Length: 141
Image (cartoon, rainbow, N blue to C red; front, side):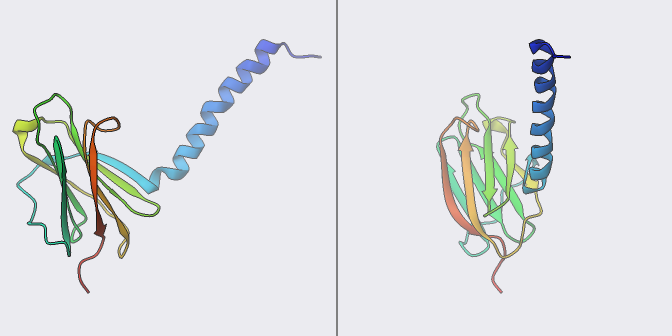
């Protein structure tokens, strides 16, 4: 018996989301995002185990000891700010959606040790301006 085209289309439409979900589950451990919690200012950047980077509207800092990311929204423009750390096969993103008057937020992540990577400061995540600097995920030996 020959299937109607609409039955084949319905079967395909069910299969595509299932395939996409399985692919995303397989990559979930490589990336994570969090909304930061209010925090004091990060430690001073020293280029050895604490790094900071700024762009118009956002500032982000990363401390290798504790794998912490701080994000500050520096421009009252209605857009949130984000700090992203990214290694060869992993990334972590910390969001600050509290506004420019709220100050710093902090996210505590677990990242692979002894990896080189990038720290990004982003204003209006996914579409806004951004800037990055190189980081190392472990302090001096």
